Image (tube, protein in one colour):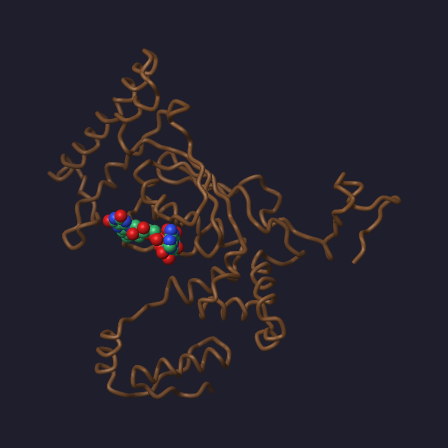
Length: 325
Ligand SMILES: Cc1cc2nc3c(=O)[nH]c(=O)nc-3n(C[C@H](O)[C@H](O)[C@H](O)COP(=O)(O)OP(=O)(O)OC[C@H]3O[C@@H](n4cnc5c(N)ncnc54)[C@H](O)[C@@H]3O)c2cc1C
């Protein structure tokens, strides 16, 4: 397609782009996936937030969502083969079910996040993102520390060595209230170190050393950019009930920011990943012997291919699949 001309000048000329670059217009009107906003922000914990600040693609054909970029990428790889899976939702669900993941890597999301350092330490383990963090060598850390409320101080879990679960009872009669209160006072003593931190930097101690006395409840900030495939991995791990409550709050907020941009993908992810169950061979055997034959009802939704996939799984459990009526 040749360049469009307006008032006798090509798009490249108008935009002051070198002549050898052919600037081609969109084939149809476009929508901004963030509806023209500079950022979409959700508050987290007591002083934190997660904000979606950019997305790729930012512009999509009018009336479509950024899911269209996944479909576009998949159609490059399948070519004519996509005639069988021609509907966008069906194609996205097929890709998700069969872990054809690279089309989901074509989309990127950039977030600005403020979180306590102990949350950041868990977050940074997700190595496939690009991160740029606030430098406490260069600048003074702001006076922001995470404190749960008295009612939300959690006890050590008896069943999970890595987690907390029920909260202390904090009504006036309960002895447990004192322990929760003691914990908050312990945090207060740690936060009081902030004045020492400031004073020592004013007396010439380097910021890079002065910060080492601050607790991990102090807030940091970073820009975090990741492709959609790895965001879904992050969400799968960090929205899970085994993840620490504080990072779960951010993961849920990240999910809520991404979902309106790629609604079809998030629906497929919930159906085939997040709310699905992965069974071991031993569990399959146990299930098979508990069921001891019988019939498997067809799945409520799904095309012929998905029904056939379910039939194969049902047989693995020793069930005879019933046809869809
Ligand atoms: C509930 C929970 C408890 C945890 N407890 C602990 C703990 O006690 N101690 C601890 O140290 N960690 C712990 N972790 C962190 C965990 O082990 C992972 O490091 C973290 O969840 C990141 O997961 P990931 O490797 O899939 O993510 P990513 O780093 O984003 O990796 C995504 C994928 O890319 C691959 N990949 C990334 N980088 C490379 C590379 N350089 N070479 C090859 N492949 C690569 C990974 O194998 C993975 O398949 C915990 C995580 C959770 C969710």
